[in-house]
Amino acid sequence: MNVPDIRWLQDLQRLLPIRSQYVVSGSIRDSFLLPLDAASGSATLVPFNRALWEFLKNQDYSLLLAYDPVDGLRVYPDEAAQRDLAARLFDVKLADGCQQMSLESLSKLMKKISAEREVRCALMLDFASRISRKPEQLSEAEHRFFVAAEKISLNASAIVPRQNGGPPLYNPILWLVNRAQDLPSWFTLDSERIATLHIGKPDFEMRQAAAQQLAPLFAGFADAQADVRTQFVKAFTEGTDGMSLSALADITELADRQKLAISDIDDAVRCYKVGVLDNPWRKEYLRDKIRDAENFIEDRVKGQRPAVIKTLDILKRSVMSLTGAQTRSVGSRPRGVLFFAGPTGVGKTELAKTLTKLVFGDEAAYSRFDMSEFAEEHTSARLLGAQLGFIDSEAGGELTNAVRQKPFSVVLFDEIEKAHPRILDKFLQILEDGRLTDGRGDTAYFSETILIFTSNLGIYVEDNHGQRHENVKPGDSYETVEFKVRAAIGNYFKFNLSRPELLNRIGDNIVVFDFISAEVAAKIFDGMLRNVARRLQEELKLQLAMPATVRDDLLARCIRDLSNGGRGIGNQLESNFINPLSRALFEQELTGKQRLTVTAITEADKVISLNLQLA
Image 1 (cartoon, rainbow, N blue to C red):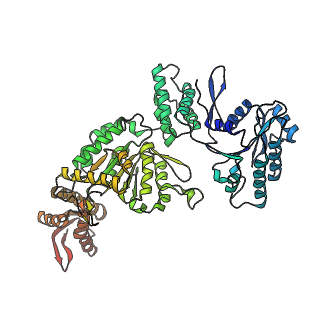
Image 2: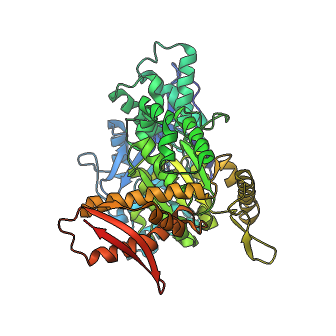
């Protein structure tokens, strides 16, 4: 098995002749793939301590001491030969495998190790981020400790040990920290002998090697054909992009406990990411629901058949797992991405809710973010989570929290053009990688979500003088509306924002909604009126009746201005009917009444009233 080289160990080997101390950050809690059995060529996933010790042994180091603020000092590995050597060279006295030490005693030990000439040895300071509570506000003892450590780094020299000889190398001191800034800034800046090593997430080659190592633990792998094995390793590697090798090991254990075979690798990875084994996207009933969905959607979203058909096409593509099939690697991109554009009040938000009900069976699986609330750059902290150290950093971000809580959901970003451009940059990562890490360092995975952006771009445009005027208007053909709106959206992302890459990620998923016609407006009106009648029956036990002439009068009042779409019809119905109806009923004795008939609508001094008959 060909095991890729580990970058941070390569850097350590290169720097040992010239650097005495190392601040190591990043994925220090990950596992690392080492070829421990040279004869068989097999590799093993080991923690940082083991990886470091195996490397040091190969460089003729005889001793590794490890310290952390909780357990104190210990010998790694905990073997008799190493314990005896530590006791003889440094008077280490272990009780139950460890020895408590003050910072003053620890600095003296660091000085001894740096100057030791009999054998090569090293000291690892684990959980070094916790040595001081506030790195820029040190106590007197902490300040003295770090000054001593800085002085030791400058006074140390590369050593040729008397016992084994070899090239001159430092006896290194390694500080394991969560972030480099967890230590005083001056400590690393003012010493040329202190190197900074950052351990990144494993790349494709390393994950592939780990997947090959873990593959035999999946049920059915040993008996599978060679091409099936190859495909499994490829799917495992690509599906874990951005994850640690420890995560790959955890996925393997999860698959073993859930009795998942190699054909279920996608489910195993998804279960690890989102914490849910059941996958609604793979339910057979979902295909049946989508197959018959056109009437279901058009019952709630009227007059938008081209938009509905295109939306269903994109949804069917998501169900068949063909989203991004033209690319080499789909990765963990969202299941579906839709960009709803068009006039206000024509059903964009309603279609998003309808899709939620259709796919997930519950509108509660719907999260809406009004992007006008994120027009300032600083509001990104609210959406994505404040960075550690800032106020409310422990709360996480509203978006990342919502997706972690509801991994199978529709996420709606309303009026996306109103968000600050810097916030829009975050959507690039979501659309490309399907994940987002908040200020706490927690990752939310969007691989099982449908993302919907809504926008009114293209309805109005600005001329050369900055004046807004209509770009499209009621009465224009749908082809004209679609062409002009799409062009305006393209111009906005390319020229106004200078972010054509965001538009490229959205691709051809732009769904343009048409204006509400008078015929469609009448259907919307009738639906709203039925809702009013149902509410009267449920709340007041009254059956609503209305002669055709009164209904036509009310319809004319509600649809005379369609510039605000269905939302405008609802507002007019409230003003012309619901408000005067409520006023009239408030003054009536309704006990025993079963039927309410509206006989006329009148208006005097701009006050609308209803003539009612109760029986």
